[in-house]
Length: 121
Image (cartoon, rainbow, N blue to C red; front, side, top):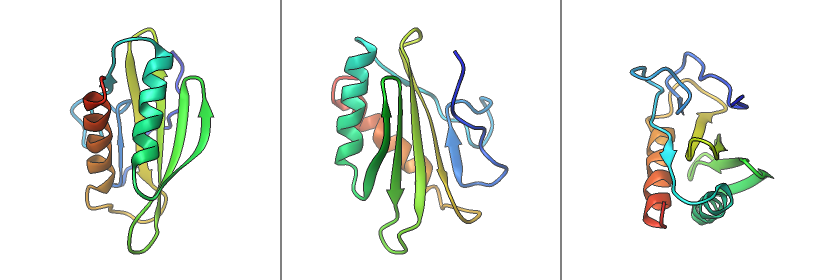
């Protein structure tokens, strides 16, 4: 499967399930059961419930959301590719600006994973 997710830059403000396993930005993809469409709807529900998050692109197997920080309103981009063949959701979450993100993107993706799995993964 080709990917729309770009590699993480060499800054500690990005996480991706497409990064090399064992590296700092790597996180496991999110597994799912059921159809791609069911996984997409569940993921949309999780993203719509995230505070300060706005969906900016919705395609059958790709979602892009902008997530704003509470205090300074910095924007992070969270992108998701739903791989129907492997039944996995790949993702990339990165700060647009700055060098560090103090693990905000990693924590966000863990929260998305937990909410998705709790909703029936």
